[in-house]
Length: 328
Ligand code: ACO
Figure 1 (cartoon, rainbow, N blue to C red):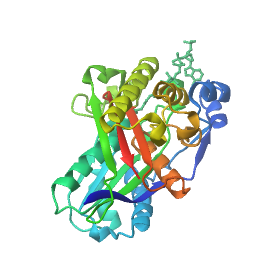
Figure 2 (cartoon, rainbow, N blue to C red):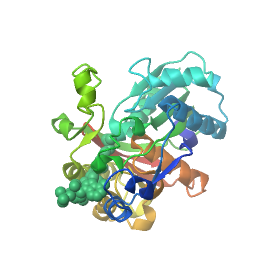
Figure 3 (cartoon, rainbow, N blue to C red):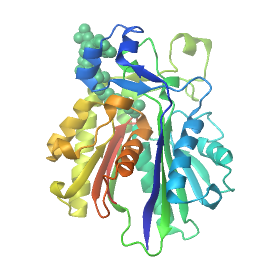
């Protein structure tokens, strides 16, 4: 018996915001954004589109690939920092929109590490309880709704998008997709990457709106350093735990936050760049969607072979971070 990834899907909104477009909005340049981050463009949803809608579009593709109908699902979860509303949870909104039957639905918030956290949690549930056979795991974000479009230090970094995976308990599977994992968080660094207002600590008020406190605040350089250390150490621990050497890995999929962070991690792991998947130049940082988008692109391009080891690694607000070794 094993848990398998039966389907993957992704969705990004049509509208593309290029670095040239950003040059007209804030004091920045294509040259600065490209050299510091690797990002050339990102997709931005229109006002009428919410995170759950992005999530549903990705989910439909994953379900179609898996050959699973929404009414067969036993569990739906959405990792997000941009839920449609504080409640009901986004997964329940996805359930309704897909026409899925009554099943447990919950959101998971671990910022950009959200999809890794979800895979760990959902894998454990499927493994532990035979009443759960088919689960929909989504990472979806409308980050444009929490980006301060007047702040050049953050607005150039983020994009909107969603990714979905269908996990299934398969009694005849040759192997489980999950090989080893390491998740971590350190709340002491909570203030270097956060959204100050809108929760119970600072409900919306005239002051919070005037102070632009409903937008992402980030200490870029500190985040950068902690991201490199966190992803590298977690990845090394996972590989050691699994007894898998870096040269046995077919692909490393790092969270797509900054091209330079990705290169620094790859170098420290001693994995050649051609086995490190990068698509940040097209999407920017899509937070909990980013790793799933990469996985779906690789999958649909036929670049994942049965038995391949794929190392996923992420970090995000919290701070949270982690790594997971999966086997295709
Ligand atoms: N265009 C032009 N100049 C800029 C821009 C911009 N968009 N943004 C900042 N600058 C300027 C700064 O004002 C500064 O100018 P100064 O030297 O005159 O003060 C200069 O560029 C250098 O700024 P730094 O912040 O030192 O630039 P750095 O090389 O650190 O790059 C960056 C900034 C890209 C944000 C980098 O620190 C980074 O990627 N950090 C990690 C970010 C990240 O991964 N966040 C994860 C968020 S995920 C989540 O959980 C939501």
